[in-house]
Length: 521
Image (cartoon, rainbow, N blue to C red; front, side):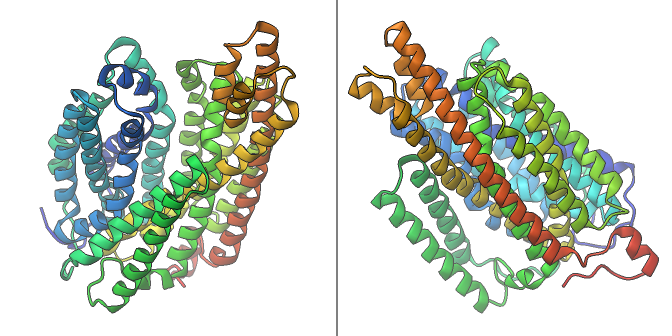
């Protein structure tokens, strides 16, 4: 196999498409690993008896280290070879999954989850960068990225369902072992089906830049998440400020280096930067609402975690259908118009959520989830396609990592900002609708969260408990209404950015007709 870019065929064949399937499976499982653990937490608490602080780290350390290492690992893949990094990551992810499954203490599980995060950061940019190198034909690349993005999003959606199924039949560690067969398949099939690619002139890896990238990203995301959980406190504000300062030092250093970790000239390419910013705003709108929807299914409509997971399957199906439609429509429609049209459809989905009543509206929420998932497909697929297609194939790993890091930031910020707005609305609504005769400590717990209100209501006399439950569910529904309106506004901003920054980019049909290269800036 060649170890550098030696001019592969312009049109991908059967081998590349089978290789895409090999890449899609670990992508699905990596994203699933972000959500599958939530259902296992009660079982882990009973078995390992971690402290509350350890429990938070068990949940969060994976995402922190995935985000922190993405840029470094994407650049490392460009230098040593994307397939080589993918194989190393698969070995590490498989071993760490097995060790995590058989952890005997909270500390051990934290360490193994951290190792899973580092391994996940090697896999994610490598898979997307390899797709950039395997599919040079624009139409084929759009389809391939649609498959990759669908795998990632479906993994996040079905993670709780898979976790619930495993926990019904096996012990808590089984949720980690789901990934092992996929990693074995990747190790067996990867060397046969996946070609090796790397930057022929990568330059020296700057370790100080890697350290600055890691610490700044982790500090910023940690600060945002802590502010979202606990409100404005000194420690997370200082951590966030330190992360931003380190990020500024990182950017300044990249400007001076002859071989930077991140080539800042990428951001001068409107196709790259415009798609990245619009995608981040879209993820910001979605990330803040996604968590509330799962809570609504379980805490407002009273579904079990497993049944709530089952009712997310129509949404997963919509993602698959949406990606397929994008592949069909993209050759004939300008990407900006297709993305804008999709974002308007997603606004319809968000609008449906404003009609939720808090009682017996399962069909309404599922319909809204299906509609907004269909609408977001063009933005996700074509946005990513533009980002990786705008750069030289030798820098595809770094571009993929920048995109994925941006999305991590956006989701974290969405949870913090939109989640805080929802919490404020919920507290305000509860303050004005608290049942009379409620003890002060019960009232405080009920005003804090919906889960707290439902717990307290079970300890109260039947009539008072029912009144509190009704009031809390109505308050949460109002909070969801407000958050949906915020998401509508953010999505409209994303649509405007797409039209302003990307409308000049022609469709593949237009390119063929004029026999010109796509306009990048």
